[in-house]
Image (cartoon, rainbow, N blue to C red; front, side, top):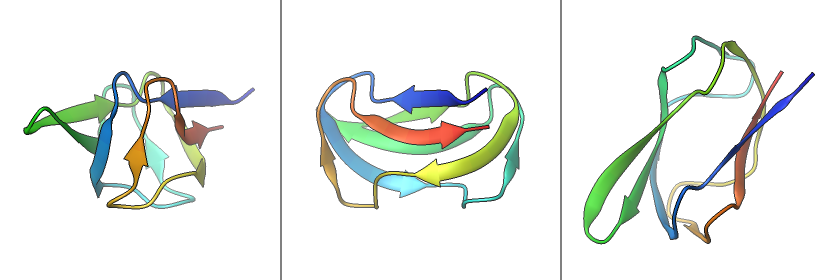
Length: 71
C-alpha cells in the first residue's frame, strides 16, 4: 500500500532531504516547503520507502499537490 504526501499549503519546494529508494521513519523531515517567507518542514506520515518524488527543488506547488509517494 502506498502513501501520498501532499503539500499542506501553496509555496515553493526549498529542499528535498531524501532520494528515491531511501527508507524513512515516521516523522522524518523529508521536504522543506517555503511559504509566506517561512521554511515549513514536511514530515513522513508513516515509515516506508520513497517510491517516487513528484517535485523538484524550486518548483511552485499548490495546496494538496502530491509531492512524494511512500511504499
